Image (cartoon, rainbow, N blue to C red):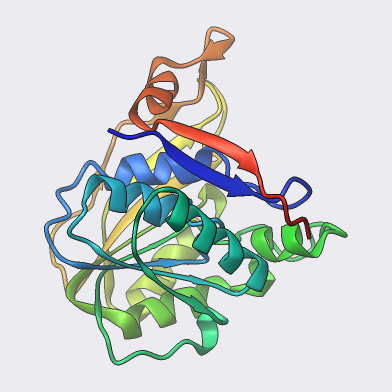
Length: 237
């Protein structure tokens, strides 16, 4: 598997382990269908990682911030991959195309959380810029029948997530909780959701980021699975 290069702005929001964990969670499945939309794509990390594994995917990337579109273009070029991209607010995005897969590492910091004075970071992290129900409503309108939605969110919001998914008749079929270490409450939940599904929900074994004061074996394996080099983008914000 080739080494992937990702350019990011030095003084802005940068991808973190959540995107890698979500990508690995998605790659546990066989992505045999064709169309994939990465919502709030940022620098394009999730969509590009998936496209690198499944070259047949027709990749689309969407982001609200024009600066991120610059990064997406550059990262596609650096990795010799093709995709279409949309510079728009997902809440207003309309398309006649229906997607087989939609993936998203959305902003999920709650209202009342202190917002960063850095606008790029604030838009990327705070749920007020893409509220959960707006995200799910948009996904429901864009998913093909039996389409799959993969996303992550703060685990404290799980009950709210379940209520909203049920409202739009989207079925959670697999979840996995991420803990910083054993004995600590889960901070993140990875989810697989299928439109018009009736299958039960699988609860996968938990993942611990640290074990015995060091990165866990599973986290170390992420670095081997995803061969990534990160660089600062010369055009700063």
